[in-house]
Structure formats: C-alpha cells, structure tokens
Amino acid sequence: MEDTIKFINERTENFKPQVGIILGSGLGELADEYCKFAIPYSEIPNFIKSTVQGHKGRLVFAEIAGKNVVMMQGRNHFYEGHSMHEITYPVRVMKKLGVETLILTNAAGAVNESYVPSDLMLIKDHINFMGTNPLIGPNNPDFGERFPDMTEIYRKDLRNAAKKCASELGIDIKEGVYLANSGPSYETPAEIRMARLLGADAVGMSTVPEAIVANYCGMRVLGISCISNTASTHDGEKLSHAEVIDTTNKTKEKFKALIVKILANL
Image (cartoon, rainbow, N blue to C red; front, top):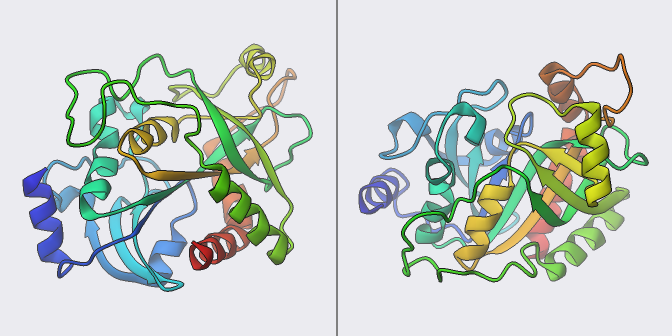
C-alpha cells in the first residue's frame, strides 16, 4: 500500500481527492472530459489490469463541480479470475488518498418488470450472491473493524440528495435493490425469477464487493445502476455485452449530468 500511494502521489503532484467514482461499462467518458492526471492500472504498483471491453483501465484525477475527484475508468471483476482482495484494493487505496465519499456506477439487468433499458436506479440495498466476501482473511484495523455494520451501506442522505438532483434535471430515477452474481454468464430466466422472489430489482456482476469494502473503511457510499436490458424471463430472449454498451452509450449524457450535479451538491 505504501508503494502504491507513493507512486500515485508522485504522478499526481500530491493531488488530494475528496470523492471517488467507479465508472461502469460504457460510462468512462466522464473521466475523459475532466481528466487532470491519468495513470494506467498497468503502471500502478499492485493494481491489476482491466480486461473488459468498454473499460479503459485508468485511474483518473480531476476537479469536477468544485470537488477533487479520483475515478476508476473501468473496474476489475471477480469473473476475470482475480481475488476479491485484488478487485477491491483500489477502494482501500482511495481511502488512503483521502476519499470520504464513493460513488459506484454500473450497468445492470432489470429484475423489476416495470424497469426498461436506459432507466437509472439508485441502489438502496444489495444482496451479495457472489459466494464470497471481500473482507475474508486477516483484518487490518487501520481500515476498519472485524465485523462491520451493514445496516445502511448506501447512505439515505446521499440517495435523497441524488433524487433531488435527478428531479431538477428532469430525470425519472428509480430506487431499488441490486443483486450481485459472480458472472461472467448472464442469469438464466429461472435465476431472474429467483432474484425477483428474493426482493431484487436489478442484477449485475460488480459493485457489491466495492460497496462492502467502502462501508468497512468508513466511506459514505452512493450506488447508481444504468438498466441496460429487460429481465430475461422468457424463452428466446438473448442478452449480449454489445447490448449493454449500446444502452449505456444512449444513456451516458443524462448519467454524466446527474453525476456532475450530485458532485456540486455534496
């Protein structure tokens, strides 16, 4: 960790971010538009390189709406074969850099049958269905306690502020529960029906590990999903990553506008 922080500080002239943002599939343009410093993951000691299409794999530092921000332009995923510790290491790095608030974004599939592609959903809670937990292993008390409370991971005050921002922008925003599976295969129709019975509104393959670690580290967490496809509960419906990218590209302008307005109101 000391090597990582030293390297980043040298490359960014000791830039001190207050807010961290993890940008999901197709949502990396925000980093390009505001970039002040950018470091490829492949150059940062102890980081792993993103291999997913639509993820540039850079740590980007910027000033947006008066806030110093560090953005992950593409995340790493459990399904790429990395350990939970590896994919959440950047969250711990953000904590050490001074980040107090973490905004998590993702592309997610609809479980709630009233959702349609291009909807935005605030995450009010999650279900960890990934089969493991990023806090397994020895505990480092410098980051958090052994058994962190999970009652309010996604802060209600941040969600309320985001809803107010969305309303002012004329964006109809949903609020629901996100269920995370390991992937990389999409869910079967039966699994979507199961997720619905469990109380999920959207499903994906990320975000939950980062949210758990950020909460553990004492960060304030806001999560936003871009609904990229309808629920796959009928025979004959096909899902593809191309569809995910296409939908997020169509949604990115309102998503970016919302993020910027939220930052201005933090």
